[in-house]
Amino acid sequence: MHRAHSVAVVGGGLGGLACASKLLELLPQATATVFDMGMRGPGGRASTRRQDGLEFDHGLQFMRFEEAALQDDVRGGKDLRRQLSLWSQAGAASRWSGRFGCLDAVTASFISRKDLQAGAQIPGSFCSFLSPGELWVGTPSSDALCRSLAAAHPKRLSHSWATKVTELHERPGGGWSLRGVQKGV
Image (tube, rainbow, N blue to C red; front, side, top):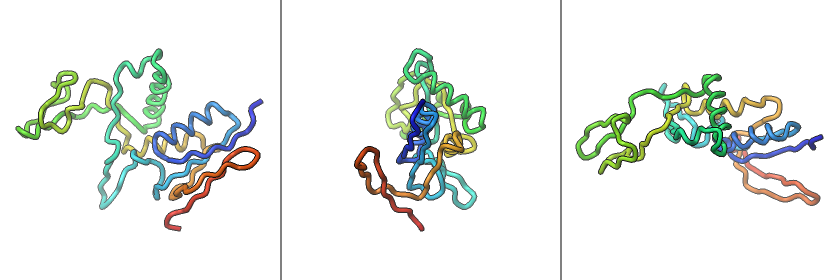
């Protein structure tokens, strides 16, 4: 029989929410609370800003996965493939097949990703890091990835948005306590 754990995770971005989700998967009796400074909900660097009817995915525009990273024999590959499948089924992510490439800042010419040689370095380009691999995007925006993770365990995962954790204290007899400040309250 597993002892019930109460877990605090600081950070409501992809890393924090993936951590909380995995802990709840491994500890079936546990509950978790995610604390994040974001005012509107989960996301961290994967958050989407909305203003004047426009949306901006400024921190995580896409995810690129090399084929080797998605293999079962690679550590975490099976979990990663499973998560992509879950996001896809929930409508929170899809493979990106849109036009994507490199803008050469010197010549102002556009080179399609498919026309780039693997590992090509184009002098003066903004996108010389583009190498082969699957491209995925959050749908309809990048924060959908985090919202999906945050909703994965509705009875066991709670959250405290707009909360800045300021202190962490070890309790006598075991365990930890957090102290924080709610922003805008």
